[in-house]
Length: 305
Image (cartoon, rainbow, N blue to C red; front, side):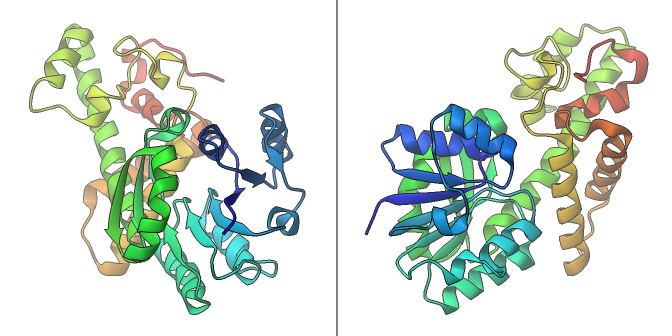
């Protein structure tokens, strides 16, 4: 079986993921509908396909997709020119997009009916994780498909988890990001309260990192500038993971909760907060810029235009 990997979707996440595969010695051919993304791929001298048929020319061993939403994944895999009808039964399909569970299962089930192995493998870690090959992959699919995909995922990521059957990868990602969205708002509220109480923010941050108020947004990805180097809050909130993407994931979480009648009051509130923030023109800011919402005029800092 050929080692050619077809990679669809080389945007902010897909581009460095594909690059890490190439650096590891894998033969990769890429495709994207965005001319801007293709131009960036050309700058890195990627092997670029002109269309899906060109992408799948020859014996492709693996197709990896990193797309914005369920409708895009469904079109790429099941549409009129869908790749499920174009690849061999020996081809492994890996969808790294974060999408709704129903669509993920629909695509995977169609592939299974045709004898094609597929996993849903959304990622956590943002642009920095993609660049540094430290992504966390949350995988849904059969054990056989997971074992087949794992060596490739280990090139692009650091932590690889098999969450269960088809759709479980996206289910786990949706749960994780609901918790992340809630905790980012909580971290922002706590630090902004400290500011209004005229307590040294850096001291409060250090205390929280070593106390029961610690969280990923506090210790790894603080929402205020001056607390940690290399995070978006220290770079005018240029996105590692955009507010728009967080809003999308929170909406998916609330839709899932409604379907199974789960009670998620904090998730619903976080969804409303991020939805409003994005509608005010902040979709392309990092999701940690939500601190501006709870901070008001308590903190004087810049958000990138």
